[in-house]
Length: 511
Ligand code: TYD
Ligand code: MG
Image (cartoon, rainbow, N blue to C red; front, side, top):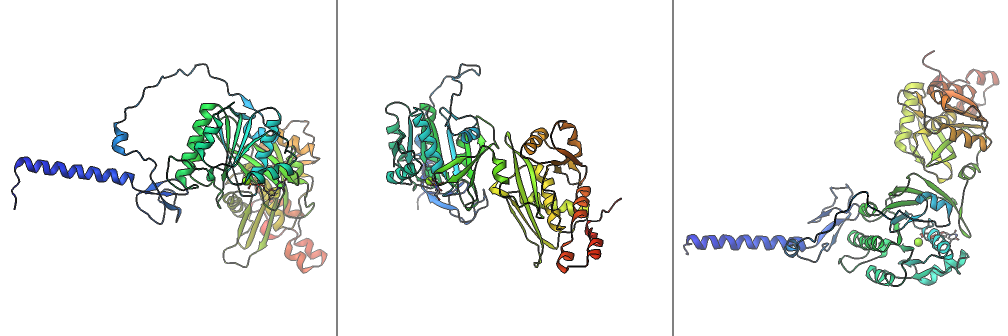
């Protein structure tokens, strides 16, 4: 039995708190569990990431820093000079790629010292597009470097040969170590453009995790971004996309880079759409349209012609939407199929449009126009693999839906645009003249547009304008011309079919 004096008691306490501190530091250095979806970190494993709600995404990774906290805490910050806002800055000189559709999406070319992330499904054509861009720039006399972490040099050469670009003076390497890449590129003239294909294959010595993990991707991207800012070279990082369409690895990479482009398309179709998701130096929602051919990606400078080229003329359920993508009007066909359901909960399948938006249009049709859709499956598709984000597509979507339900083909020479409000009113949208001009250019004869947009329409639009104030009148108009499906199926005598031409479900509630 020991009797502690006042002094020894104190020492005992100090020893214990020291021990606790050491434990704390050990805990910091011990492995952490990092969510591979959002990058949140935890100090123990759990099934669900509380930050993003995903299951089974936590992976054990070594901590970010090998430097113990106690040493880091002692380091004194170095001072730096603060600058004025009005200082002379090198204006962002842009480097055009020679591919007009790509330059449109970047906002006029690659900015010196910037980092751009290009994401897309495997096989969509990211490597093809970047091989074409680097080759064209190299041919124009710029030093361009293509680093492939995924393919061997021979494979990259084979692709270049297929594209007829093997003679371009692109500097090529198959490397994955970020330190080696930076050391190599720091020698000689600064490259104007560096492509890293892909960021998930890169690894850096500064962290211990395996390549492809969040920590590695983040640290590698950070090192490359630092190099770009320091050297003034433009860097393009290729990023993989997860099954739900996000660029794999942490979202933080998207926050770190200056611009994010996403390369989209339906695998079975030839069209590819390059979309700017984020751009510190240019507009977003600009799209570039390409077609995948046997000789690589071909630019499509008039996308409307492409999206309308395989139109199903005169069949019910299709409507042409006069949309705007970025700065450019794009006409696209919307297709709807409304069929009686055999399920308890009817199916709603949407490709190329927001499913919440479809639900809203269906609800408005049901609530304000008496169109009963609860007993029907609804399939909705945007032709050509385009993805529409504009609310202006509401009117065209509603027209396609009603046309399918009423078995009433819409006029083939008409385009539709307008936003539908929850009250069933049709509201005006921006850029009416540009939409009308594009429709007239492509040979359309009439436009169905919001009543309130008539004032915006130029007098020499070259189209006949048909305005709608509310959804009810549009529905009545389409239904009046249709043959109800049940009647068509039963092959009723002509007079009875005539009587049924406006089914009760379309009859207007008011007036
Ligand atoms: P790729 O650029 O390798 O895709 P990613 O880098 O996005 O994974 O493109 C692969 C696809 O493109 C492949 O399915 C073949 C097709 N392709 C063509 O159709 N024509 C071509 O000239 C080239 C080079 C590829
Ligand atoms: Mg590739």
